[in-house]
Image (cartoon, rainbow, N blue to C red; front, top):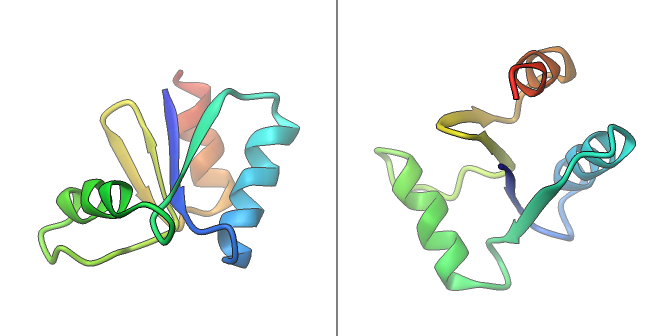
Length: 78
């Protein structure tokens, strides 16, 4: 399962949304500004407890603001 933690207003979140959509991948966008429970989930992924978005998770792999190449590498492993 691919999860994108981000915010609708964030241009980088929009960038990752379009990358995932052009690859016809199922993913969930969890808007951390609109939903406190999603924000808490994201904080729990990081020791510093900060809202580091956009973050993409693919299974147990966490990618903070990955390059397109790095993201594709992990998507290929799905």
